[in-house]
Length: 91
Image (cartoon, rainbow, N blue to C red; front, side, top):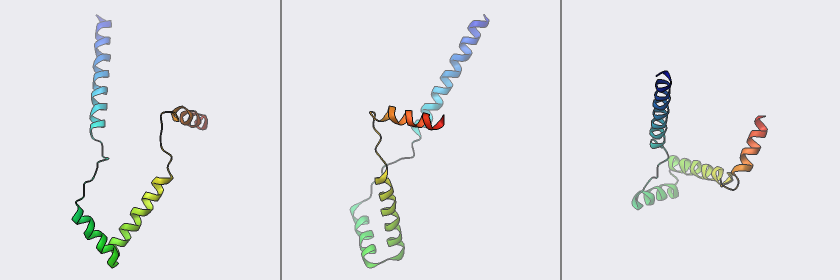
């Protein structure tokens, strides 16, 4: 009887953990933005006219894009090499 109780207790724990994991992955904050053409044209004209806030935001966007271009892509074939390097630096 004790073994059955322990088994069901562990089973319920695993189920709760899996449900929690699924709910966390559902709340992905990386979303795609859809901006209409007229809004983009308005921003472009503001940047060309030298609007201070628009130009500042434009330069921030360019800097962020440049930083993202420096990041190596992640690949399945590089996964083991990355893990080995990561583990060796931890040890």
